[in-house]
Amino acid sequence: MKFSGSRSLTVVSVAVAAMVLAACGKKEVASTELVVKIGHVGPVSGAIAHLGKDNENGARMAIEELNAAGLKIGDKTLKFELLAEDDAADPKQGTAAAQKLVDAKVNGVIGHLNSGTTIPASQLYNTAGIPQISPSATNPKYTRQGYAGAFRVVADDVHLGGTLGKYAVETVKGKSIAVIDDRTAYGQGVAEEFKKAVAAAGGNIVGHEFTTDKASDFNAILTTLKAKKPDVVFFGGMDAVAGPMLRQMKSLGINAKFMGGDGICTAELAKLAGDAMKDEAVICAEAGGVEGEQKVGMDKFRADFKAKYNAEVQVYAPYVYDAVKVMATAMVNAGSTEPAKYLPALKSINYKGVTGNIAFDDKGDIKNGALTLFTYKGGERSQIAVIR
Image 1 (cartoon, helix red, strand yellow):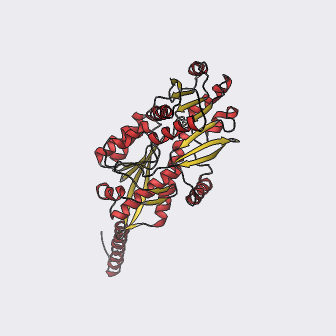
Image 2 (image 1 turned 90 degrees about the vertical axis):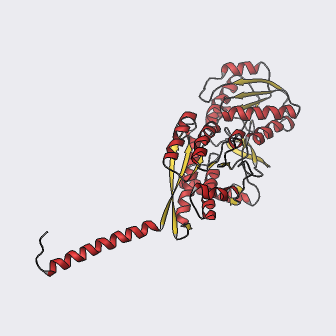
């Protein structure tokens, strides 16, 4: 480059100085910000996509609030980023999604929704040393594998199925109880715990039939059960299957009470069942719940969620929301976003969330987990009781 006189040199010097200052400014901004990658996995495609989206929206809501709060570790502001993956409630797709998050070097994972995807994915997160909090997987095996970084914020199937089984005999007064499960890790697990509790309460199981989480025709198994005249039918599975099942029970003239776990206990079930759902004919349980003063926080969350997403909470959005906040709080308490460094703080967390108080036992299960029993009236969920 040819310069003509001192004026040109001065102009160039000023330009170079400006570039240096700009570069230094960018470097300074970058050094005061610490990116924290939080993975979330749920089925946002397929038959229960409405549940997966509900969970993902709970995560997004928490991430936005955390960023607005401007949390810091030392002189660095934490910038949370959500890496959302779809597992379509399929174990193979679930492990593929998990591997993507491991490769992305996420700082922690919230998910998966289903036990059948959570359990195989947990092996990958454990090997990578990445803490995982499931907001909804209830199969006991998940936290009984000996993985240091596996946690859940809801009660497990021992509590869920056990409570429902006892309720079916002692409160519903079921004399002839039939069971159907979808053979998934969740459906089979909750059905077996239900059966154990029925037997312990002196109840009578008259039949146990099987379907899949993709089925839509249940006439054969329902006809078999109809011959045994059940007054209660328990289904271990999800609402996308339970809705059509209720319709076919009505068409076959089966007037039994219909019971199930958290998989059917959704705002969507009434739409899926249509006119086959009579008032108080369905009894289900959600693996969580609040009462008294804590209900104020949950009610506010539900109102804020509806205002933000123009949708009712299905089931577990508030548990996802709390799980994200719990993970972030552990990082701040530990003074580090590195998994190995904040894991001890996660193990000893004592966090007051919208879903209640969250603390974990030595397996990673929530301490004193609640269970909420619901029925349906006028197509809307109606709370029966919160049980601990």
